[in-house]
Length: 420
Image (cartoon, rainbow, N blue to C red; front, side, top):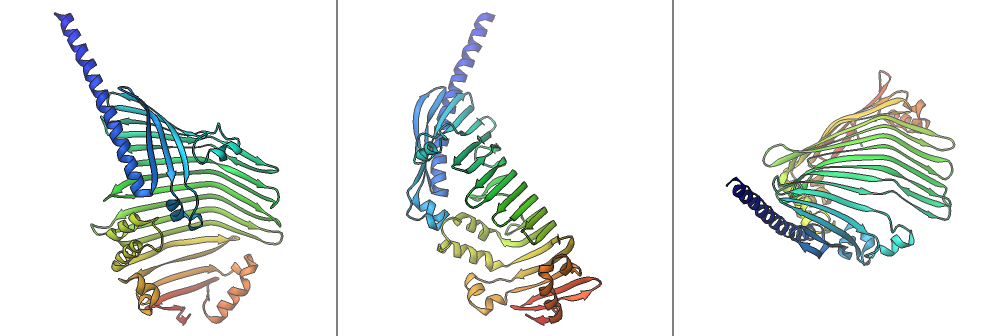
């Protein structure tokens, strides 16, 4: 009796597992078709799924990606009339009960980019994606990677260092994305230019709200960037970080904030040296019309002349907004400069704002600037301008500082009460 029960339970588990695999495979087919249609509708990029081996436990095939000339023109007007760009990915998927494990790898021997890979001897270069999707929890975990490669042409050399990233979220794309690129180096012998980019990292939350993709929160950091130009001109940067945040004020408006910090930016040539250190920027944009913002996101990429963009901007401007400059500060060759204040835009339209005095009347605000009184000595290139502005009254000497109050009222700008 016990043996019969065990056999019955085992048979039920096998049948249930096979049924779950059948359901998972059909779900894979449906999701693939839906995502292909969605990508084409939202981006204009054409995807085509060419199925290969397909059974209860396998879904293999080739995913063709074609960026149309129209999409290229929207990305860059100079690409108008160019040929479509195509690539292919080899996809191998394993079907388990309520789980899908996929591996996707760029085929460097197919598509319009294949001759480029061949000429650069990059047939073995890899760009791939691995993912695990759970229908049980409606979740997805993915990782992507790009291997390093080098391209040499004569004495010129370009080096691409490894890149990787991951995604954790739901099956619709709502989740958290991270990436890490070790950087790149470039040497051009004829122009005597050298560039080094090191450690670019970032992350972002992704969410679909009312059919529009938004990033409520994101951050990025760049460890270092240096550019050596001809005539002993050198630009070097260290420690750049940015943060953005998008949040709803209420049911009709939202606010965005933007934060930037930069440890060091050096500009050098044979005779001069300008060091920008301890740089900070903090901006808040408040009171944005939610529907207008969503409409603008929906039509972005369709061309700046598109009427839909103008309509979205009009809806955004109809409510007005406030730009709060929380902090803008740095040290120039060791001497501090800073500015803060806010600018308010009253309800207006795109036509009024740019084509009539009435639009300028919608702008009002007050900004305060403080500069070190020793700035002219620290940065001699600025000394003549600072002296002239002080003599005109646009800068006031106050306790070893130079100060200015910038006021905008109904389209009229004054500095320290003097008309500009």
